[in-house]
Image (cartoon, rainbow, N blue to C red; front, side, top):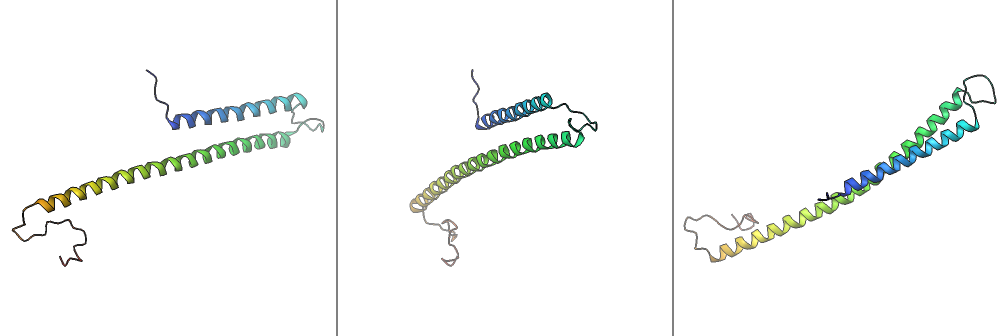
Amino acid sequence: MAEKTTAWDKARQCGGWIMFACNLLMFVVFVFAYSVHAVTFGADPTKWDGPTVASLVLTAAALVMAGLTLMVGIVAIWGYSTLKAEAEKIAERVALEAIEARQKQDILNKISLPNTDGEDISSGYNREERGG
């Protein structure tokens, strides 16, 4: 039996593919950079030195962070819209239940026998306005 795939699973899978693509791109850039220039920490000006390598690594890290930030932003927008839709469904269901309960109470109040102990058996809405 096939398992049901939720939207969260789809978002996680999409995020995984995005991170894989970022890592693959960084790998290709590093392989190209290493094949074009030899990386050493010596004083030879034709070769890369330590600060050059450090700036390359920090740039790559910044690109990964930008991709991660973009992914988090997309998930946040998706989560907000999902949360809003679910809240609307719950509010509608609760409102319909309250209307149904009120209608049942009104019908029961109309067909019930008079209250002999003097207590107001109607619902508690607007009790102050009725003087109760």
